[in-house]
Length: 304
Picture 1 (cartoon, rainbow, N blue to C red):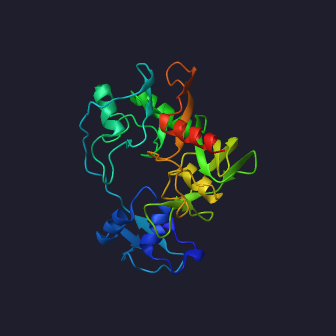
Picture 2: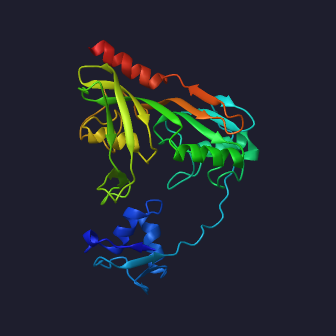
Picture 3: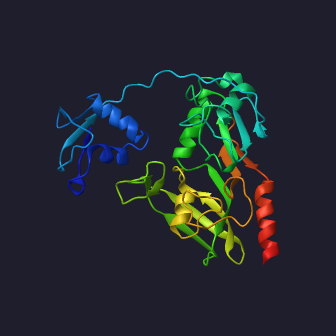
């Protein structure tokens, strides 16, 4: 049960819901509305219904149909592995799990082929997947091999005790040596593919810390540390500072091209640390800078 705040008067029902139920697509919400599964003050309404403010909105979300995932024997760069967890270095260009427009060649399918017993851990289409990286972001990602490990790691992420550091190369010279962006993130109000910084109450809290590693004439290399893990968080927060990640055409400035051909974003998850879910020891993993970003840094150093 949700209550419409007065400030939302005049907003379409489907848009209002999409800003609060970010785990559901706009199309999915409209389907639920058409099916009579969304009620405003007890009555079914249309997606275009304009809210007045103060209404009580009920939504019924039926369980998704059971889905299966076929294993695929794909290369995996394993950084750490035991009977409980698997840490891999994901390449840029690989999707973590099946989604809209991508059903094959995923990290989840490769993990299932590597460790068949992970099937059913967490979910059928996301076996063992505890957190994600964007398709064009590379680096470290931890996978749970048992349900107990999965539950423990999810709790650690929620408690913000998992350390995740990234290397990012951004457009422009970042003036301050270090800083923090504390701004809520939610679905973009008009572009459902994108995320955006949203007003308080319309997005989830997101905190990103950064410090300068190296400055170039028109670019900066940063170390970035996540305190929360929202969709596209680093990319949205750095773009909000006027320093979008190199190679990011979604949040980057028009005509702000990468200085060299770059597969993916200049964004790499370099360090991952967590408490082992069974042995309670701190596991810290590091991933080398990939060649694509090394080439970029070499080019920028030479240009300076």
